[in-house]
Length: 490
Image 1 (cartoon, rainbow, N blue to C red):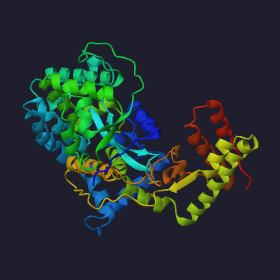
Image 2: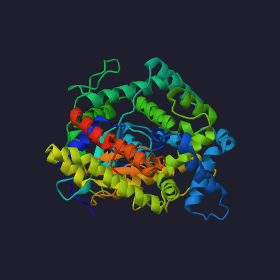
Image 3: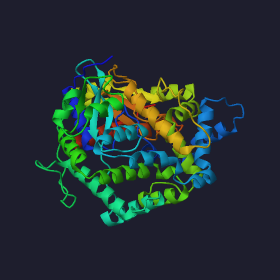
Image 4: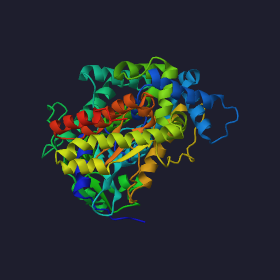
């Protein structure tokens, strides 16, 4: 059943923030792999043991049933560690998708290919997300956010890297394709900042400083009027959004107008080169060693120890399956109860100085703050997820598809006030100012000292830092961190 959704001022502000930082992820959307893996902490030091132990326990469970958490964890890890098979396959796992691009005969096919790649987790010029509307029904609204990926490093070095990867994937005119792909990326990034009023921007034009992006709610059947030249009806229908809502929050109408012009006017071969590069860039870490090594050498962020990287990838790819067991292992009921009491005392200590100063707004916010400790009360359903031990790329695609469908499934539904924006095994506290919720993951609590006084001091410092990071006033933020860091009486 379709829902006509209205985006409040608070929703608009959230969308504007999302548009200004397209690489960041809202609590309602899981980033595709490998972005999720890149954002997750490496399993080093004290954090390595529990995560590695969980993966090893899954591998050693000879009684694990097909479809169980242990089966999925063990088989995903096995698919990443099967280097011999991965190297033998080369780029063959992507041949069907590369062929999909090469079969494009005219620009009218762009919406179909882009919609398909979005669901596979391949970064595209725009992405779909869900954002909360706070004032009218407290439900999730659909949003359309610009998300063009840009170059890293100098244009010359980056183009050489793109050429190398394209050549590895069998492209004959790799140098020409690389130049076209990089030029298209630059054009899209320029559009996200500012759109020239008359024509498609030039690839040689200087970059324009970013400006705040306007936000507006647009009927889906009117998107073609806002940004003519692109089949928006098909684009939203192909991903399932048009079947669930009549309207969508547009985070940057100017970007969409410029993108639609590019879709209508830019050379088809340039678009095909761009799509090919985005596909290869997204999946290179999961292809043969020559692809993975080239990707790691240029973009960095990966461990040289493949088993260590595999543990991190499992945690990022299957956060709820790993998190559920991580919480059970590191946060038994008696420790949870003790920490809940400590958190309550620490929040009272944070609030006390502001109550004495008469800062009723901050004191009131601290008084009503809800701590979410350990892990989610309800873990996300992964029953439909198929994981096999010998097909890494297919596993990654299915995980990305599940994340997209999960995002789609909450569209129009009431907000989940207990939703977790991070995995339970995350090592950072997160303060959600919109919900006035402090998320304390099990991963961040695991290494707190056992002594109560020391624990309170360290816990207070962590709480103060998390809440203060969302404040605009540096003076108050500093006062809050100091107040929270003060040891509380035993």
